[in-house]
Image (cartoon, rainbow over all chains, first blue to last red; front, side):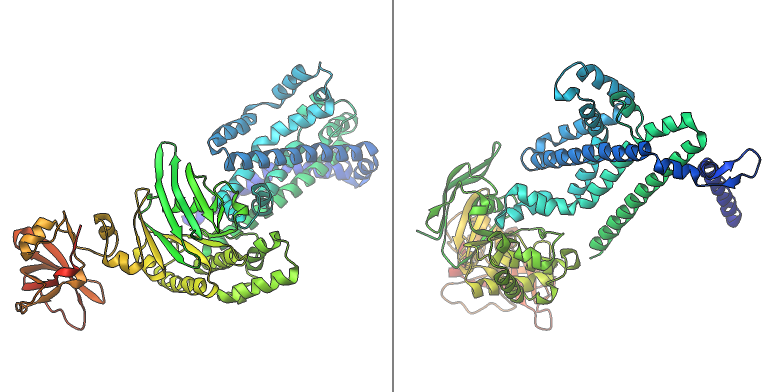
Length: 269
Length: 337
């Protein structure tokens, strides 16, 4: 009976996995063959990949995706780190307000956020009205809760106030001690949350479409344009995006399991 | 002027008056213990000396200089905390070298000092390991090495042994005392454990409710408690009311209460020979507790007065429950409070 139920659950699991993977596999196959009108595709070709990787627009979109991902993440990490340092060390009572503030973006839809930003800033002539500034600002807001949670959880795992006091007694200033002693200990948390943020920004289409001018194209925008040209080429773009996302997920999972292993090892001591 | 002087220290946390008019002197080279129950203000006073807390009122002097408003990193004070406070991302070597690097000493000198200090605390072979690879006792010894290697003017130990198991704790008490004497470093030790205070200290300051209840050498504090609180906290004093005690033992001890150490009471089956200054009363043994090396007999006297008497355990119980015994003690060892 038990064996039978295990077999049936395995069958169900396999069916679900196949069901989920079919579209991905179909897209990969579609991008690798010239013709797929019958049951069996024929005419294997890498032309679609060759085409997109020689297309400067695609390479530019990859490069621009990287830029609009990295800058907001670096800014947000710095702001959250310094904010949490000041709040934890000098104003612990404000911590709950900081947490609420940082969680608010979870509830904001991309469309609402981008339209609100446009209404608020687009008409002005300050630096805040620049398309790039608005885009980076919007991305900072989107990833804030993820970065905040990653860093805060890392800080909870180390006894921050005591380590800072210990460093202070050895002759260090609090801020320097924070960067020399606390930050290296929460580096895994920072890395994991940054990679999650990269994944999030990588998949954005709504915000960049609304906020950026036509000369800023991320990979999602390129994908949308490719779909209009040729579905086989669009499939190739999709496969590249998917592989990059898989790679990011793999790195996140490896880092997370490594930090879990470390924790287990430390607790075991 | 004393090496460390606290002058009229007051400290409030909100409306909570934690330290009340503390005056305290510490001489150079001594190991002084601040002893008291949790919440009595002993750790707060230590943190005020470290600069990790600001005093509300009063002055602190160290080596002739006022340091009341000096930031912690400029006070030249080393500290070991209750919990393990080693930097987890650094090896034992880097942890111990941290303070020396901040002093910008040459690399060779840092390396030599670190190795020397680790040898003193007996952890030379752990130099390349990380804190997570060490036991609790080893971590505290590294913390001690890290605090001492910079040759601070004062070493502060804030209950550093409270998270360590009993046997290791006893060894570390002796070890810390040995290292402190070897280096001649002025040390202030905070603990709530009276045995620990007895073993380690040159001087004990007993804290109670934000004030110093009594100061003295371990022997003075143990044998001559000045107040009922001191007698309750130190040792295992019997604390009957003076009226009850005087009635049972036909004595005339002045004061409200009397303090009698259980080990000064002698029990015997026969009435001891009468002599000058010997107080004797007859009672019954309702129960006893074994402490391994000694047996603590409860003795119930007429009128319900019960006192404990300690007898060194040799190889058999001298008295059983229900036995009638004579309890005798020297009058001059009885303390009126």
